Image 1 (cartoon, rainbow, N blue to C red):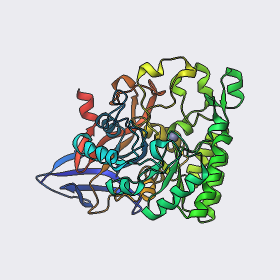
Image 2 (tube, rainbow, N blue to C red):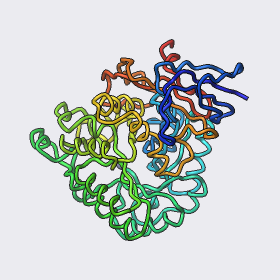
Image 3 (cartoon, rainbow, N blue to C red):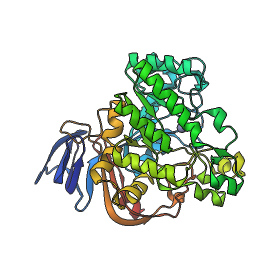
Length: 431
Ligand SMILES: [Zn+2]
């Protein structure tokens, strides 16, 4: 069938620890060989000289809005934005309409993704029916239909007894429980991080403690049940410390951070631009620094975008009325390079790990590696090309990014999913 030969790139594969110049030969959707001087006269060629060739990036936290909210995003457009950001696999959160709390909705997403998505889509099922926090969702049948984790993301599970039962079931079905850690009573009415800046701007605050108390509770429940527990979009100093402590105690705990939580802080809210409004809110400098320290020290397992598209009509309202959330698929790699690699904080190997083996291990996915025989998902990116993010050119249906107009150095060059080039910077430039 079809083959693709990627030549001359610097191949970085955290799964094997490999880092060196090599060609990558792909045949029939699988990695066929890696080595120097590979040849295949039939193959399409991609010259990756001067670029990094990595396993396909995985974003374990994306909102695709289909079914039900297709004016904000669809599985097709979200997948295209993912490909443009260098992602070959995305996990979609269940807060659609209806909520993905049954095998019917899970099957719909799986089927629809097969038809229209240019990258792999792995659904995450709800923990509770309608994500209302009371009754457990049909976790077993969703698992059979293809979910890779459970979460009520967008909301926490406030009832500790319900969370305990969910964790016990998750052990049975061998899936992680992902919590959006927020105590709704503590955060109620808040629009931004509570601190000096919120006081100065006169906006209502969401204290770091609203995240911390929920992380603490969930870690205790994870210890009680033995569940694999994952903190979504971790954003505070204390949460980093508690996850580190839990890991040192041998708990099966993991966490992700978003690029916006380490790249920018609550100071940005001074413009009252609703594209800086999200949950958890942009924190102050010392929380952002702690998140970066967690990345450097190894406490953080994955970078995830929390891509949360909202149409302009909703984000144009006055600040207090705007929904929370920003898009993020197309800027994640550029921001991570800028804040983590170009500033000398982490190695390229560590960066690639945060986007590949990190999330793959949490979710037990068979992707995230360039091992011979693995699915041919490859992300090719560079470190030097200067480019400017233009949100009007986004593949997403929504435009709610705070990074419009931002200059980047390095970013995705081509994205290969299932052995096919699904996005190519060169093509986009020719358009
Ligand atoms: Zn969330």
